[in-house]
Image (cartoon, rainbow, N blue to C red):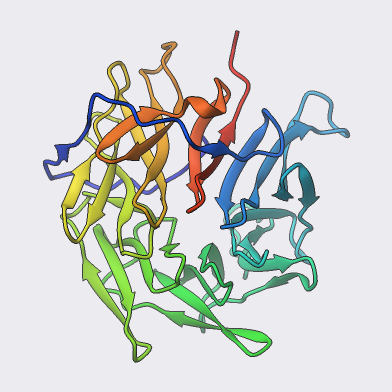
Length: 339
C-alpha cells in the first residue's frame, strides 16, 4: 500500500469485536475508473480526490500519478501551485474545496523554505497556498470540514512539528496551532465533518482536540502510548486508525468515549489491518492484507454493528477503502491484480 506513518511503541492489549453474520451488501463504490485510482478523500456528495495512475507520455514505461477531483466519471486534473512541481490532494469539502500539500524538490542537505506548503483549490479561485505558522518553514493540510470553513494539518519549524487548523477569515485564512505537550507524532491530522474535533498523535500519545463553544481548543489523551495512530474522526468524536502490533504488522483500531479502545478482528488468513475512515453512523472502512508473498489480499473492508467483512461491492480490484460518507458511498484504491 502507498500509505506512510510514524511507527510508535506498542504497549496495550485490546479486545477484538467481530460477528459471524455478514451485513447486507449496500455500499456504492465511487471511482472515476475501474482500476488505476487511489482516492484520498470524499465529500458528502460523492465527489472524490486522489491520484490516477497513468503512463507518462514523455517517458514510456514510467507510471505517473495525476492528482484529480472527480464528480462521477467527470475528472478535473489539479494544477501546480506556482513555484512547485507536485500536487498532493488529501480531502474535499461539500462545496468542492480541495486541500492538500504542494511540494518541490530540494538539493541534498539543503534546507528550502516552504519546500512543502498546504494548499487549497476550487474551480472558481484556482490553487493558492495557505502559508505556515509564524517562523515555521513548511506546512501540510490533511483534512477539511464539510462546510469548507476549517482545515486541519500541521506546520513544521526548527525542532518542532505542530498540529494546526486554518480558519476562514473573510477572503483569507488564519492559522492557529493546537495545544501540544510534545512534537506531533503522526503525519495525518484528522478533522471531523463538523470541524469540532481533531485527532492525531502528540509525541507518542493518541490525542483528541475538542473545540469548545467559546472557541478554545482543549487536548485530551485518548489511549496509552502507541495504542492508536488516528486516521479519521467523526462528529461524535469516534476515532479510527492503526496500531503497530509488535510483529511488523498493524491492527485496525477504533476508540469511542463509550466503548474505549477496540481492535477490529481480522478475517482468517489476514495478518494486517488498517482503518482509514469512519462516518457519522460509526461505520468504519479500511484495508486487510495477508502475509507478504501470499495470494491473500489486499482487500477493502467495512466494519459495522460489531462485524467486519470484505467489501465485495467493489470487485477484486478494490484493494483498500479509504473514504466513506453518510450516504452509503465508499471509495479507495482500485488496482489491477496480478493474474
